[in-house]
Image (cartoon, rainbow over all chains, first blue to last red; front, side, top):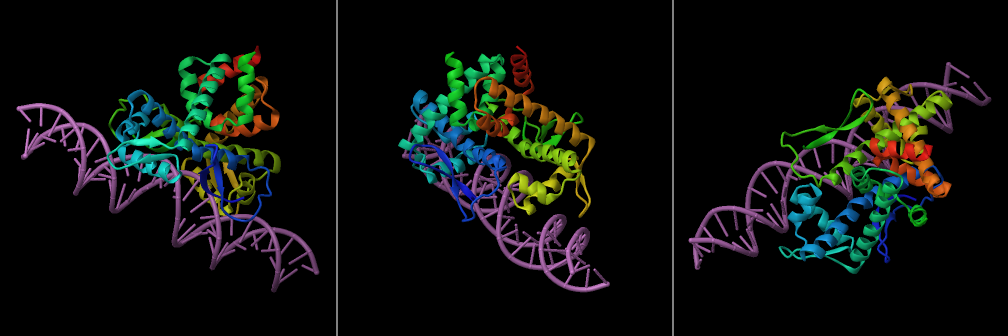
Length: 156
Length: 156
DNA sequence: GACAGAGTGTAGCCTAGGCTACACTTTCAC
DNA sequence: GTGAAAGTGTAGCCTAGGCTACACTCTGTC
């Protein structure tokens, strides 16, 4: 399978967009999967942050998003454009950013996953500071299977 | 701190290369860190794979690397060029790829970290298949602090 | 109600990491 | 020792994700 980008399915899950015909013969393409997961990471971060801002401040403005993410406002605006193309967000010029149904669904999945990952790190003895920090990167690579296992472990 | 790329320090650790003067005021740049970590991930994968190939087959050829990583040989060659620029690898045309001291050091750190991450996932109940798969992405975001915690947990 | 400052958007540039297409070496079988 | 196949390298293209610089729109104060 050749991947030409990513897209978002109806359940709000970010999946690779198939590009070519040739069916992937190699099973050692775990790397490819890790790479594709990365592709959705940024979008996930944006969606989660926008959802947070909407909840706490009642609005999500490009400058606030940029500041929180540590990028320039131009970068934020460009990515918001991508969010719109992917059907995750809505935005009219000078009128702030909002999430579509799909975007909201994704946001809550991401939020829930983040919580579980941090809790698991804490549970195995990672200091809070490092747990929060590392979870930010780790969470995007945690599959549903692994997430379920984390959840079971935490309930014990 | 503005980051213009990454570089490798004397201990074989991949670190961001500082670019501009302005000292980062925002502490919410956890995101930035997760992003920078990603930048080193590819190099780490290449170095680990090259080390494996050198150990098992006695040589590391671009085509083998490409096949194992699931990318075209052209992409592999381009990245090998980057590895050379970063001082991690050595290669003469048509003569295979080798690692520098720094590259070998990085490879063993990466290998060790990978093992710990997989073991931790298994220890908390993640099925082997998913553990191997997810570790590939997760490992690049595990800080030394977190790694040490994983290690302590596994020794219990 | 005008205007300064904050926020927003656009253009254009850069690098990393992908790809295909094409040209050049090596190697190995005969 | 030659010629085909396999491997290698180069060129050129694309997208994502960054940036700065500049222009435009809002907003709040006087």
